Length: 270
Image (cartoon, rainbow, N blue to C red; front, side):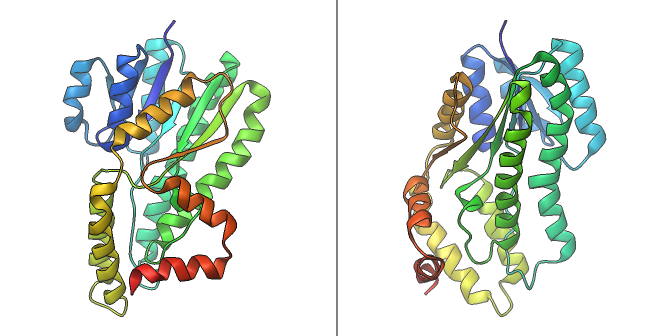
């Protein structure tokens, strides 16, 4: 029987590309997002569409109930929903910071809680958490985004060890630069939050640097193929990376000191 997969954040970018690829490979795909109107093409391709807001507990509970009622199982959860709240830590309101953590971490954790009993009953399953190289490397002006992804890395490590006894695997994907609406939203948030204050020059430099590299970002299909490789593997690794500059930057993070990394990163803001 085909495996049943739930993908959050499936209305655009990496989530949508992954849903499209997995449908072509014969998986039963449930695509979840708030903006279901953006998934009409996925529905026509055979995906089953769920309106799920990862900050709304009831929508998550009902979504999982619907999958189990329809399929009697759920094999793979791909936690892809997320966004980047950018702006200086001094400027970002606590309300906004809490919302960033709610979307990128707590919503993901709650959805994971909801699928685990079903995977445990099956004695198998897989949780794929979409992190970022920003879960290992922090840039200025993205403190709360990085905090959410650093936390996701640790949460995934703990979860992996907890659920191994039940035959459930946990894998982290760390994308680098990928073409999507993510960066536009992040830069818009940064401008709204800090462009007119003490950090305005840093914001402007960050936006200019982002524009320089935008065309070199990887297509979302690169990450979709990486996810396919993970879920098709009998013994997947704990972490995978892909996309523009992902592997070189992660290597530099391993070999450079904090002060060397700071110097390299801040060099982009001069």
